[in-house]
Length: 125
Image 1 (cartoon, rainbow, N blue to C red):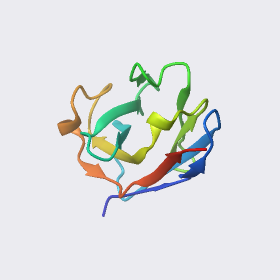
Image 2 (cartoon, rainbow, N blue to C red):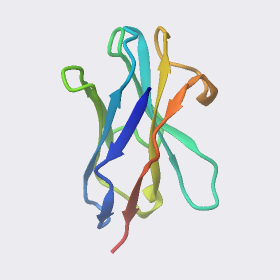
Image 3 (cartoon, rainbow, N blue to C red):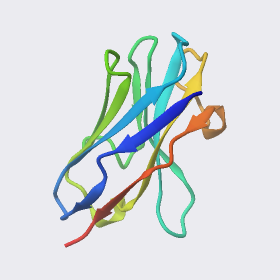
Image 4 (tube, one colour):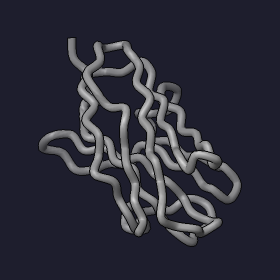
């Protein structure tokens, strides 16, 4: 069974940092992509960042560029999202998802096959 478990969320002041983790298990595909998404109250879910297992290429939403960094530790089957210079508008539930048997990075959210339950990030003073 494929499982994705997010952790690392919490309450942080504006300008602070958090590092989210996505622990993946239950699949053995060599080619896959992990994506981070977020959903704020009353808003649609949006993509944050993604990483390909094939070649390590990454992608970021415009709001994440320069502040967020995605990385992976294949020995731990874990993908991380380092978030710096956090703003109140970053407040959301953050989810990770996996797209199996893909090369490169998926173009759409619908390409992702399995999702975690999310971790809450709240940026507030």
